[in-house]
Length: 367
Ligand SMILES: Cc1ncc(COP(=O)(O)O)c(C=O)c1O
Image 1 (cartoon, protein in one colour):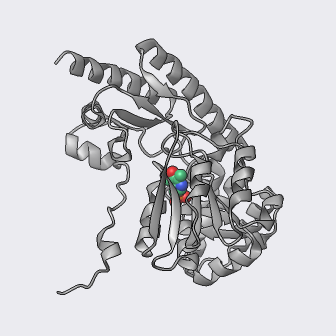
Image 2: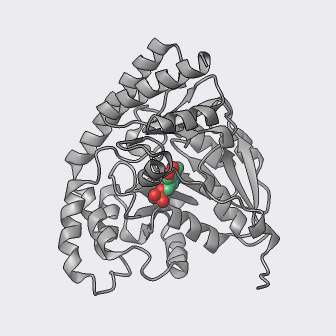
């Protein structure tokens, strides 16, 4: 077989997802492990969503509603915008892909913060774009530097708020000043995958009706606060003219019927959202206090995950934590060789994590 692969595809490093529990347990011969590596919802799926899925099963011989009327209307109502401003996707990853497909030609430029969510880089690179990565300053997106990178060829700028993996946010004020510096033909994408968890009152929150007269796209997901990562549903809020273009280039049934029903029901489950956010905030405060007790450096977050400087090679700590049955993320590949990232789990999972970390760090200190 002789495949002709474009250079810009050959150059892509694949996205490495967090390890699934079963794979880890098989590999390490352990059971009852805890996964705190993919920023998932420790409470499980939203119960109203599960009930809606059950109801939708009898119709699985039918194609889904290609326009996603019910879900799109609910998202629009929840955000005070029109359904014409909403595009639904197979996860927010899908909306990232649609934006790149619709707006970026080979050779165009895309600005991303670094480190941040790697799918911005991968998706842009797969379209043959030049990725301009702008380093964070003090773990926070440097909007000034990002605006300074814009050239006549820049088509898209990604802002991740709160940023994965650092958990930091930008303020409305800084964001407005940044937008004012950009030309009208550059589309800014604000990824709000974790916005439900932000506690900082100054945190930027887009997707408001007043955002619709600027080239701005807000990304949200049902994967995190709503506990539906396995179903794959996300959405974008954007000016209607841009939504119309994205709808032209998406697959006609990009969000499956169960996912549409579940996400629509999840939006009505305020109690579950409240419970999730409360659990995350309490868990963060408990973890911060315990890490203070251990004398470890960590970075306060506006998301459901945060970074810890373990003061040792993070890959080794990651491996040794795995042997204790606790899955975290090493941040070496993100440029932080001694940092790990964990997401908040259930109370007992957080305690397991702390016990495992203490054990692992004492083994390294005292081999
Ligand atoms: C910042 C950020 N954006 C988007 C996503 C993708 O979310 P989805 O599951 O909706 O594709 C993630 C997933 O981890 C993320 O961290």
